[in-house]
Length: 208
Image 1 (tube, rainbow, N blue to C red):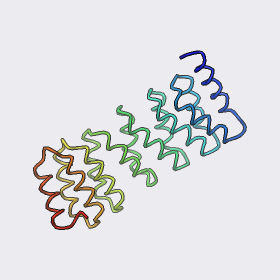
Image 2: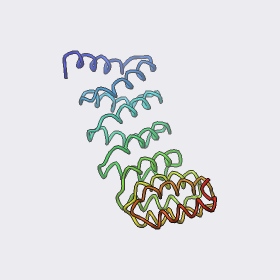
Image 3: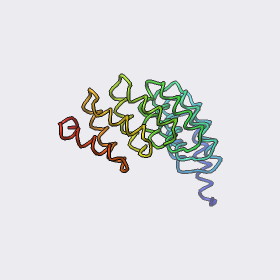
Image 4: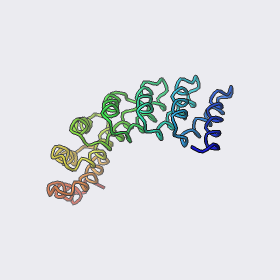
């Protein structure tokens, strides 16, 4: 880090203590581009700010910080009182590959406000536990949950269970779910059944 960039980071960290919440919000946002340990620590501290939008800004900024401290802080943010903070934390955790992040996202599937973001984030992970959870979500009573789950399962092209679940989803009562299931099956390149299922649904006019 150069002397000038250190001075900028230090100034922004100081601004996180400003009495004006809008200043703290802006400082937290700017620190997303300053990825040294001091900036990470300052943003983690900002997650305890009384102002919701400061915590939201700090959560989004921590999404650019990839060390374990940032990951742990984002996992903690999944329990924030403000639902937008929890949503931002789930989205940021989608870029983490460690088991802690995946476990936290799986748990977040039980949060009605965060569920869709957690499903979207889990689409970046393809281990068997995630696949099983997404297949279960594909049976949820909420069509939006099923739609997001279908889209996420498009990345699970090496899973026969995922392919079969998506083929079944082509008969979902909701046309949007059927359409996203067909789109997801297009990514399952090694499965002839996937292509045939998607093509058949298209021919029947089920995936408009």
